[in-house]
Image (cartoon, rainbow, N blue to C red; front, side, top):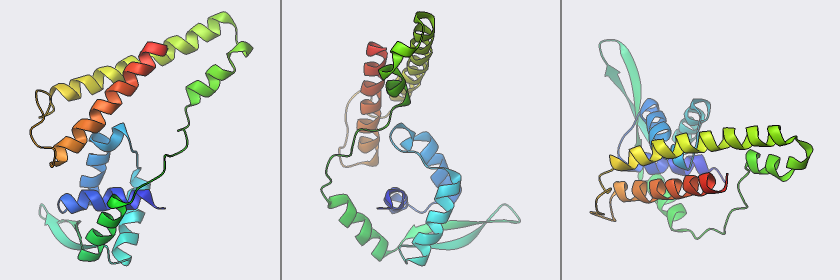
Length: 172
């Protein structure tokens, strides 16, 4: 299943976007639970266009630069909503390089083990700090205003990412 397809359809369903706009959203908002590279997004946009799930219009930016502004079609909305409503079985455990290394710690010296854990802890603490700072600026940081808004989905994902990082910090 092409899951990137549905991430892109979902974003464009919220409003017309350029490929650059999509990259910004992936890097700023979806990064806490989903990642896509530039080299993945643009080929997927081409496939979605060929499948009739999105269309684009070429618009001028500035005096000379052209960009494609993508919009979702009715077929794209239908496909996206069908996917969104589908019940999914739990995914296998995600891969975690640090935990795999931790499983084999007996092969390292005490100093090397401490170095691995200290480095991991520092990374997790930095990530947690960024997430908590992001939460402070979130419109729902004080109280949840509307569960039927895009901000609510972002809020629960952000809250889950903070919980995940707090757990990593606690056990590191």
